[in-house]
Structure formats: C-alpha cells, structure tokens
Image 1: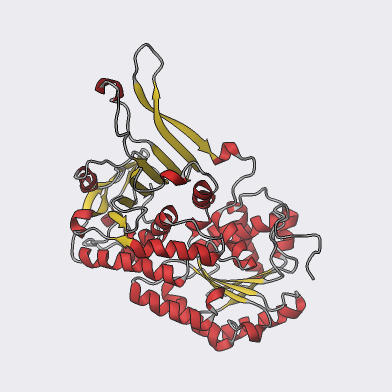
Image 2: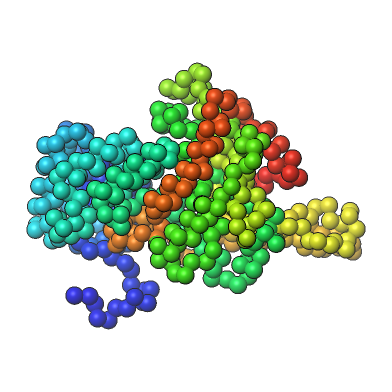
Length: 505
C-alpha cells in the first residue's frame, strides 16, 4: 500500500525503488569498478536504496562472496563521491553475493537463477531484478540467450519486473543494431530495455531542456532566423588507454559520435515535448535524428584524424600507431569533425559542426550556439574589431555551467565594443552537488524511469547517419595531427571555407 500522505507533486521526498536485486555481468571490469559499484554506494549513502537490496556479481573468476566484497570495497572507497561511512558500507556489503561462471556456462546461469529464486523469499525482493551488461558487446547475444533459456528475463515467471541495461556501443552498424534490438526485445519486453548513454545522465545535459523550455528568454531566438551555427565539441586529453582492441575496430565515429554527440544534437534541435515522459521526449528526439542531413560531398564536409606523438599538459604523449596492440598500418580515426544539417523549418540552413577527438589540449565537452551578427552596426569599424558573434555555451564537462557571451562598451572616452562573458557555474550556484551520471541512471533503472534512455528507433536512426560516413571513409587514410593540438588543419579549413572558425573551447 502506498503512503496516503505522499503525492506525485511532492518533490521533497526522494524516489526509492521497490525491494530488488542488481545483477552485474562483468563485475570485475573497469566500468563496474570505476562507475557502477561507487554509484551503488553513493545511492545507499543518500538513503535511496530499498531495504533488502542485493547486488549479485557474475564474472569468470574462482571467487567467493568475500573476494567480491573486497574488490567492491576498494572500488567503492576509491570512486565514491559522497563521504565514506563504514556503517553504510557494512549494511550494503552484507547483501553482496558472487556467482562465478563464463557466459557459455549453462550450469552457472542455472545457479544464478536458483540464487535469485532464493532471494525472492529471503530478502523479500518479489522477483524484481535488473541485469546490467558491463561486458563486451560481442557477449550480449550469448548472455541474452542464457537469460532467455533459464526464464530469468520473464516477468510473469519471476513474479516481479525484470529489466536489462545495455551499454554502448549498441551494434557496430545499422544491420547489427537492428539484429541486437530484435533479440533484446524478444528476450525482454521493450519497455524493460534500458539502453544506457551515460551522457544523458549528466546534470548539464538535462539542463539543456530546462534552459530551453523553462525560460522565455531563449526559445524565441532558438532557430535559423537568429542562429548562425552550432558547434558541439567533445575533446579528450587522454589516448585510448587499455581499449586498443575495441577502439581500433570501431574508431571515434562509432565510439562517440553515433551515441553521445548525436544525442546532444537531438536535445539541442528538438521541439518542445508535450511532457517529460520518456515516450514524448523520445518522439521529439527521433524527429531531429530523422531530419539530419549529411554533407553533399562527405569528403568536403568531414575530416578524420589520427594523433601523432606530441605533448599534452606538459607530458610526452605517444602517437596512436605507437600505442600498445595497435597495428602499425592502422587507418582508424581518433578524431572526427563533420558538418551536419537539420532539414526542418526551425533549423533550415544552420550548420551543426560536430567534432570529437583524443589527445587534445584539454578535456572539455560543450555545446556552443553562435548567433548571427547584428544586421547593422552604427559603429566605426575600428571600434568593433574585438566584437565577435553572441554565443550561448553549455559546458557539459568538466566545468559544468552556462556562458553567455555578448558585446559591451569598454570603459573610457571612446565607443569601443568588445566581447564579455556572463558565467554561471553549477558548483557556485547550488549548494547541493550534482549526482554522478551513473548514480542517476542506475536509480532510474531501478524505479523504471526511461526518460533518459534512448529507445531502439533512436539507436537505429543514429546508425543511419554514421553508416554513410563510414562507407565514404572506407580505404581512406586519416589526417595526422600532433598530440596536444585541436585536431588536423583540414578541420580548420573546412570551417574557413564557409567563413567560420572553431570556437576556442
């Protein structure tokens, strides 16, 4: 029975899931240790997990529950964003269990199914289980078939809800994405599938919607009449780390452009939804993705790059071809810049310049709305030499916030005008710290809120943008750029041909 004193409109009370279990496949991997386990601890520390909550780890290790708890303890203590409280950890850790086995081991999955059945009675979880795929994409079908074979994915058989969380990349082209969508929707019901894109869990990404639709200031100028162009940048100062095998087979376009950046583009370009229900938001994002147009000449309107040795933040960095386990003749890109359009009335003629790169001067993700120059400037040309386009910049990371850049008179006896910036930073404006993206998304999975998760149609439409690019690039060699630079010179030339330049991020 629900609380009769609680209403849906009361924002003071937190969302707490029903008693449930979280099963993490690949629990010993990087994602689980760096993100998932710390997120679970932080949720427990904030009092957002239900009584009887259980975490089951599944991996190819000859471990017991104690070994799993030791790994989880080290991971949580290192990655926690809330203060460490030993009593919270002890309560949480008492509900940790480990099931050893490989993904082709029928006996291990039978044992997992029996364990979940036992928990239904012992912990009162009523059959509610979320399965998190923290595993290589190639293993998805194998695990899905095991969950199907054992009936663990069946809501009716379990007596509760069964949900699955699938990490990106979701397929490696349109055909594989369709095949995987079909399989996962057959094993689980479509509304129980959560395709996670952790960028959508970031507070600043969600603030795009608040900025646009909670204010009357921006929406009237959020269109082709006033906007000259949009730039979306995701720069990383690191290389590929330990992801050589995966990265060399995918590259920057499949790894990041297909998911993170196209999702950001969709949020910037979408129309106002009738509500913030997941179906309404998804419908508007899908319209934008369907309206994306590629350059008439892909070779003229896109640039691929690959980093050379150089210096980043004062430290020597090796080139991509010198990275461990990368073939010496690899043609995989570590940088992509592409000019996209949105073919609808709001955005007709406005170029969306999207770029992503590794080994850049610094780590930054931002969306810059560049407005058109004023149609008439009654100033002496020398007085406005320092005046550029008005800009609205949404900083997604690391300095989360919003910058509004506009012209102002310089104090003095002459009418000199130059750009100044009004800067809003999350860390200064709010006393409450933003939850980590995975913390928000794991909680959303457990309460069944799909508003921050792309659906199958969005995934497939994104691949319809990427596949023609990949086909045009096939057999071509990426442009070199030195580590510590903002990408290949050809990317600057691409914008210069249209009388524009990349914003200095």
